[in-house]
Amino acid sequence: MSPLFHILHEDADLLVVNKPAGLVCHPTRDGEMSSLVGRLRLHLGTAEGRLVNRLDRETSGVVLIAKNVDTARELGKLLAASGVDKRYWAIVHGHVEKDTTVIDAPLGRDEGSAVAIKDCVRADGASARTQISVNRRCVRDGRLFTWLDVAPETGRKHQIRIHLAHIGHPIVGDKIYGADERLYLRFIDNTLTPEDHAALMVANHLLHARHVSFVWRGRPWAFDADPDADFSAMLSACRT
Image 1 (cartoon, rainbow, N blue to C red):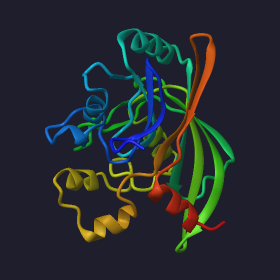
Image 2 (image 1 turned 180 degrees about the horizontal axis):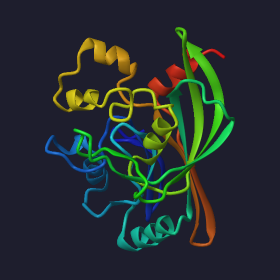
Image 3 (image 1 turned 45 degrees about the vertical axis):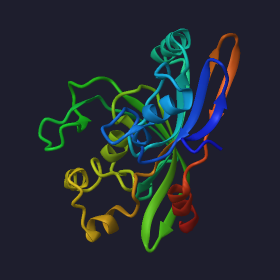
Image 4 (image 1 turned 90 degrees about the vertical axis):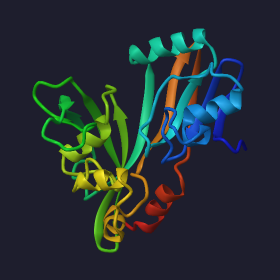
């Protein structure tokens, strides 16, 4: 296994990895190991690799990486045309009542938030739809949680996180869309308290991009990634 990332697939044109939670996609000032793109450059020995899809810092899972311009263009067109099926797992607070639900709520900037990158549901926002289905409702230490399978029909920023919070079931560990957005501000300032960590329960929010599939160059492609230890531990600790 590569020390840089968990490789799910690699050929001359395409690299697919399971991005760990807590790793940003884009380069930072903290060295090449601090970002997925930095690690990619170390792996390839060049700066030619391009991310086809991106995940938030704390979201783990499948990321497609084109090794050349032609592959990036072809897969980019597929993604733009909704030709890529993406499935996520999420663990949220509370018991989601319905076994299946479609969340149809437009998204735009949250102008009232102190968090610059925060969006919200707003009537004049861009259309966004997310399908969710319940895998398991469970209890841990007297608190209710639900393990969900999530399929976004659109690809808006923070869409899954906002939609789940909008229906009253924020993702466990979500510092922006959870109970208190000030947790994110303290996280950025590196001033989270022991009480903050206890409230969050986990280091990174429990959202995992588990599956990506599409038809490309005349054949079907499908990639699946296992969640990390924190996600798996949460599932193991929850009883029905």
